[in-house]
Image (cartoon, rainbow, N blue to C red):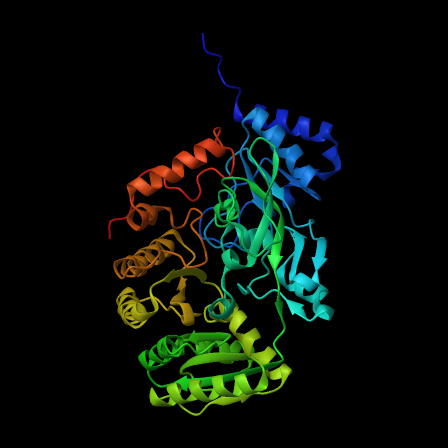
Length: 473
């Protein structure tokens, strides 16, 4: 005779009892306001209240929680800054939301080796502020107030990826708590190793489905001797895209090249008070290095832009002006939101090989026109990645229209050899595209790996790997 499993609510209470008895009673909350704050990120997917929130302060706290969850088959989702846009942190019913935002210590700093080890709840901005006096910085810049653990979990990139790479290239090792509560360390401090499986890369981008990242060994970089920024505007979107493509194909080591189309630029001019610019498609550039190197980068970039009908460059020589420009770029979402304050802005992304970017953007503009929606475009065009900020009514019908446009955009990217997401990740929002992108056989291997690592399916269930139908285009 088979025992009937206990109801989910009863299993949750048993797990919470074990967690409290494990010394974390003061770190458990069932306050309605705390539960609501952990019921969603910034995604369009419906929120779901967790059964409880546990605030972790060290790796052993995470291990205690996972041992209790594993013993009682209770689902768990890690929560950092809550800025994910594809439903990564939305919990399952009767789940525990494990908040890592209090884990903000720099565990070790090795300035002479250009690396450091940090707890997963530390943000990129806070890290760079705390290590400023060393002359080093961490370059991966997704724009939002994301935690470094969350950036690992979603394999984040951002504005500086064209020069410094993504999280995958900038993480040397991890501390991870497995579904059973066992703690492991992957990688190390060396820059290369040919021993064993590359488990660090396995957990980067796993979205909390294989284990919970609690510490990160980061690669740091020296601050450039000289920084310079520039803006060039274009009457034609295709000219701007072609400029970005040629800059990369020519091997110019530019630090950042960001595109804002005319709709986004108009919104950013109003929201960020960018006086002196027109409502035209715009490229933001940043150059870094020795003074002579920066001059060479600038001259080559300007020549390419002007050959593609770019208007005169506007230079940002002071730190204050550079900060103003990049803050405007990072505030693009809020600028788009201000276009229609009562509407919903749904941020989505995709990526294609750089040579296909012009074709993709042209097709997406056609899809936007056919949809009747207002959609600013912007992105890290130096690596073929761009974002669509879909402005729609905050209603089920509005969400459906936005989702259909998103599907068309992704279908175009996949047809051009691209990916459904360059940096936002899968979560729940991109599940239906995974089999089209990777194939059934590859997904079968991913599912087998997940079952091996988490046989009870308690780690962020319902995310990353699709359980059923896929989008065929």
